[in-house]
Picture (cartoon, rainbow, N blue to C red):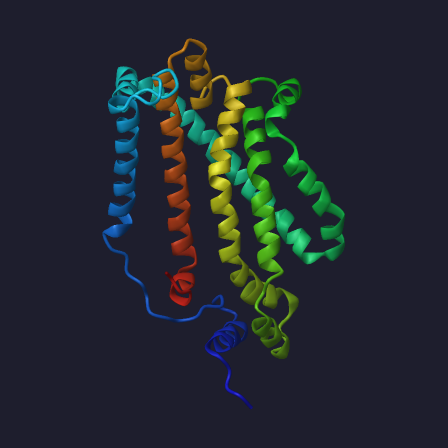
Length: 284
């Protein structure tokens, strides 16, 4: 009889002990200053190119893209106003993302657990995802009124599909050797799901969550542009209406910063929740 691989041994221990998810032990990687310095360098390069194009070469008209100094001055003129609207956008983004994550994972679990449900509802989900969300704004206002409800609905509609897809894909892509090992150990369906299928699917699920986070911010801004009463999208609409492009770009940059912070918060959550992934996967 051939010896079990390390992954199979870990799965066998998890199934027998009913204590820990499947994991493969490997050397822990350390992170250096490059994790901070490289993104900072990229940001500085982008700011330099922006300054060069708008202030030195003057290739872009200020009405389209103001210089960095003008955008900074617009923010410095009313920081409390920007931060208030940024707080509203962040709250709507986070709440909508949490709701879509919960529903998306549940829908993905249902599709992965039943081939009948998958064949029945996958075309409908694809059709819903293909509908231009901006066209739904007037309908959402008529159904839900003005305020946060239609904005949260826009966030949900825009970002739930990647979560559904990643969850269903992860749960139906369990490594064959682990699935066979679970069957050979007479694991119940619940044990196989909790100790093999779900841990193996979690990295894929987090991929969908990381794709959905920026989409949640986009959905919040789209909703605020159309039906919102506050938020950075609402501020952009106001500033654009009077030709104040510096204020509009300051709000756009804040939206980008919010997306970056939420994305890396999710990356940190993944590292804490799935420590075995970094120990068992290769890097460039």
